[in-house]
Image (cartoon, rainbow over all chains, first blue to last red; front, side, top):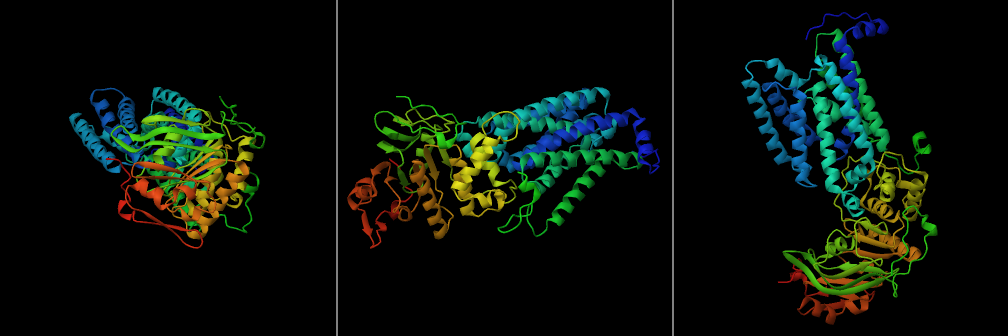
Length: 298
Length: 285
């Protein structure tokens, strides 16, 4: 979309200008919540090396969303339906299934193909396909914002409930199993959490740019913070700032929001990697080295 | 006959001594056959291990050593016979058993402090979102201290060496102050010096805490100075006893069913001759 708004370089005036528009208010509300859930669930996605699975969910969701458009129901219904059924299938395949890159890739390719078919059957409305593939947060309705609130509360609640067993199972599957953790159910619940988070995040970033909220912030955070709770908070902060500033910049420029989000999280990731270059993750703590303030405070 | 139950919140230092049944045996197996429906890996084994015994479990690949651990952990039932551990049937989630599974590698990018894993070993099974309690932290610190891991506690798991990782895994297993310790090939991927260090450490834990430890290994020799018993699994059969009883030509010949020679060097190291071609064939036809 092209921009009709010119920037004043006075943040207060600019923000007032931006928030005069209801679609921008909705975009900020939904975008913030989605950044929050993507930042939290992204931590576990990265820790469990399930990034590829998360990407597959978004593309299975694409087929669902395209079908929804074809039969005239809201795309989020198809996104949720597609990605949750994909998540259940992968979880049901067993504990090592998330590592089955080949099978997941095969299903993913077929899903994209199906989505393409549905879009072409819908005869010509390519903007719909474009917005599912690359995101369209500026078109989000009040109803969709309410739905995002409900989904976020549920998602964060369930994640909080299973937080510690999930962390344990992610780091040490065999011992967690021996300690009596219900590994099968944890796997199912986690897959559904990721599927729901992906479905909502697609509204911001689109199917193809899903990594920019579900993976990059969490990967950056995990590179910096060695304590899970700190890494989760940092991951959320990165995602939220990226969404806010992406919306802000896009409002005053003719370029898409998802580009700015993607570029910002990528830039930050690069900076973090460069700063740590040669030092390995999170400044390896070697013998004789002074403990950092963070460590002393532990 | 039920032993007093030990709450997993109890301070390890104040855990009462446990008496299990009339004997002090913590693990008792009678006529046990192990394996899966379609494949028996070993059968008709009876053995018992008492409190504070250090036991090596050895045998060729695929002989059913890990299967034994899975049965003791309640992850898999015996095909026949009965197993009792700590005075009860094996059940999943028994906090009185510490377990170090066989692992290949930890991803080098796992940037999580090692002490987090040790704390999870104690309370990773608790639901709900809450930071680790003071008690969790203290218990983890103690376990790390016991394995000489205090200095590596804050280093990320992904950068630890094989020996350092084994210390962390051992601390994770010890943090709930278990009565039984199951260690699945902790010595693999360690050089001779680290191997010796880790064995001294395990032996220390066994003696000081009166823990019954079962340790799966490929090479019996580095273990010999510390062991109370050997459980030798091969050819679908199990021989259990003191190293002096099990590691003889007569006993291993009976176990393998072919002529086997046990040779000893002046330092007491053993060499088992005549079984090489049978490695990997620990099954019953």
